[in-house]
Image 1: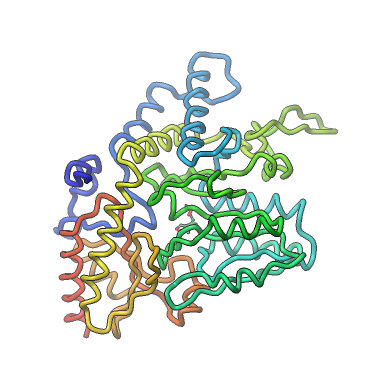
Image 2: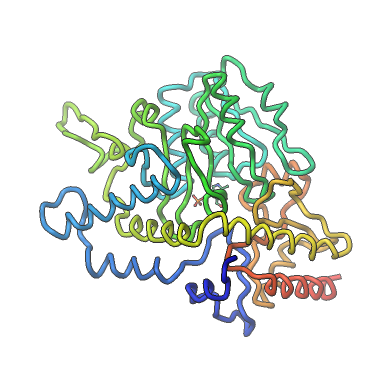
Length: 405
Ligand code: PLP
């Protein structure tokens, strides 16, 4: 059992007030709060070990390089990748997916080729592929979502054809919370010799991820959603694919030698890391992963599942509420609509009670179209949330109903 009250002390922001009310932070799917150790690591890295990495012979540069490369190893171990050079530092999930879409397209896509996505993808895993529709004439096949909020695996099965080049699906939906059966989906794609990219942005903060057990070919996530700093994330790629893919961007760091006639590219992972990397962020990223590992993802998942169950039961008592995403295998996201109340109005009023939730389409407009709605209110939980906060939330929602109906 986690001692949540003790853990909450690691997050100074959780004890602040908003509009004179104690903050209830239920917007964790957008970004998580940061423990003191992560912020302290940023301070320490700037004050004690700030020097540009990789090229310096001097002491500080070597120290910074070692810390940055240790951070890469920390990510490798966290997601159980085989090699550290299979971890590419990016600005986040979005850049990681764009990297694959852009570089994979160069070697693999011709007109009429197909990429399989699902109806529950975040815009980050839609628009990069749409750019390739425009540039290379590829087609997208979209796995429908059933009324529980699960992918229709029969449709997925039927989509494979000799033109299928890639599957790109989310591990956990940021709107519905559905934990998708990516392991079996990957096995099926591999039976057709098709590689799979998994968007892990909403999975890594909530469940243990083992990219080798999943047999994922590419896996992307962002540090800021797993208690780490903003502006950094990773792309995991199997060595065999990263070796094949051309660089995504050109510049320093990603080259071995440059002349005006010819450039040879650096080895993995640097081939994909043009320019000065976020070597401060990477070390704070590693601190965040260490922090999460010490708590234990199994304990985190257990507590969050308990919170989700409690919140779902509590909110279900509200007459006429519609909850979107009822999959049995679900992570700590609760999207809903109160009868005759626009989500934006509900969000604004909840804010006056000190409660931070997200409202709108959650960067998943195609899913909203599929559900026939404009948006939802989304409460998303982290391990530092409590049942008391859910009680406050329920009372606030009842008041919102009284005020707006
Ligand atoms: N994929 C999913 C499922 C997400 O929820 C998000 C962010 O909300 C992203 C991708 C994009 O992450 P980032 O903005 O950190 O690149």
